[in-house]
Image 1: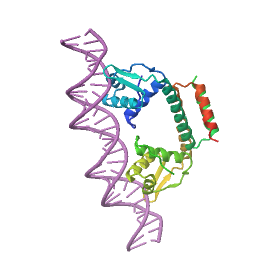
Image 2: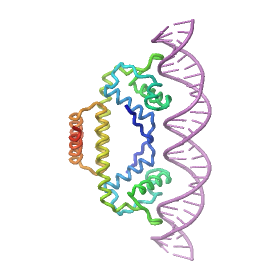
Image 3: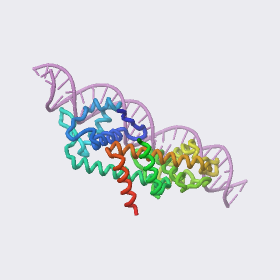
Length: 122
Length: 122
DNA sequence: AATATTGTACTATCTAAATAATACAATAAT
DNA sequence: ATTATTGTATTATTTAGATAGTACAATATT
């Protein structure tokens, strides 16, 4: 799948977000081994250093851990993953609502717009 | 009001977004005169060059125009503004729904989460 | 007529991010 | 034992964005 990187934001942050999402969504399961830094970098069409930075940040956050020469693995702390998922959702929701309000939309309008958009995905 | 700038994205883009939002939301009305580049820069705590860049980009998009030494004004093309507002809304909605799906949420979950969040703002 | 304010232009400098190119230590695989 | 793969570290270079400082032409304002 394409990584869809945006030139206007630090790439390592976008890599972090993408991998974090895959972890939270269960694309990578707890305990799973990640592809190597070099593989991931190749797949994302990114310099290995950049991928390394993203991964080490995720490690700092406790989402992954590395066994010296064996590879990198997803955390098995499922409680943490669930909390993270809920937290990220809340964050995106608040952000979205605030943006829509600042655009001048009222609650009811936002609600019906969402409703419409959800219908159209059938 | 604070400009709330994020270090991880080009500032001039954030300035553009903010001003565009104020225009679309009607904080600035069609035909209104904008504060001068220098004033805006001071208010946003940003270098005048950066603000100038943001404004000239907005001008390229047709959202504002400048009278040589009198100042800068909001476009009076209200049709354009309405289209822009609808377009931005659609964009944010799609983006939001996609992100939530990638986090692993289903339509119904998203819907009820939004419902909850909207209730909590009373 | 003189002054102040406007948008605009230009050059130089600084910084963070990304890339490029290697290198090394540890260990799994052979 | 040897080899390949792993994460990791290091140094140099390039680029985009932001800042700093200054200047100019046009025209409201006084």
